[in-house]
Length: 387
Image (tube, rainbow, N blue to C red; front, side):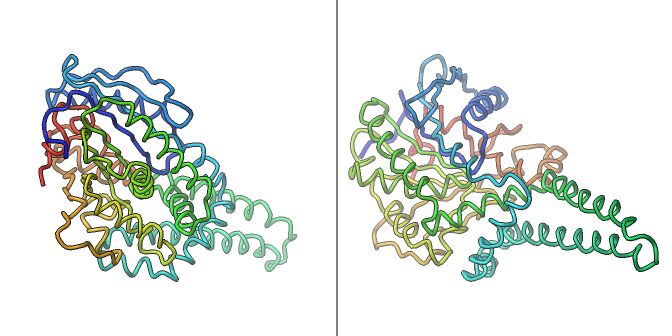
């Protein structure tokens, strides 16, 4: 087993959430936020230019403290699949949302979430309630506006302009609500992950297998002291089958010269592992959590309703650990409330999207959770978070 200690060279693979923005956005975000955050932690980070790293990834090199630590940061690309699965309009969104929530209802997802994380249950529930509620109110109002002139004895066509205006206004109101509360974004996420759990997105399964082959090749060719796979949001779900594939190709992953760490940020696993059809995910989850060379560290924030915070993903999914096996993931709170002055946090906490992305963004006050130190600093994951 590799010893804990300083990291001379690191290899990071980053698995994003369900976000159609690709590596250019995330490279710019890392560079921008690192500049904002490093005055707090004292690291001098130089973020290099983005480059292609084969057909499956973009990469950039991060140099810490003048070369003390060099990190190759690989952004795993599945944004093309996301864009193909991204409903383009309200009608497409409705067609994906209804069967998704029917499966949620049959699995009693909301009821089970209520017992372990009420904020997550609310986050799952309110998008479809808001969407259907707005749709029903808009349609009824439009029908009433269209019929009223005829009931009053006026020409029937007088009702067409107000009915059309109400329907158009309903669409714009829905889009404003999406901008404000990210309701449609959540519907898109659920509308993709539920079919995937039931084996209905074969191109994503194939991409995960391709990622594993590509990663194993890069890990074997690298002289990195530490290899990290970082998953954010929905990426925390997909890293599980990815690590399971890595273990098939490299059964001794993390047990020899190179330490291997799995870092999950804003864990969403129970949103899929609680569904009746997610048997393969639960199998992979047990494999990953009990692999001797996989050091799994999980960070989540209580305020983050888009994740399922500080909940043992194995226990809530009905998965038992063998006796004598370390409890993984190790779970640590990301205290977003402590990252900002009160007046700044009072503004940030109202934006669910902003809170959910804070894991990979700069704070204004240094806390125990430091994304940039974890991914580019000289201390290893094992040193920062000993078991």
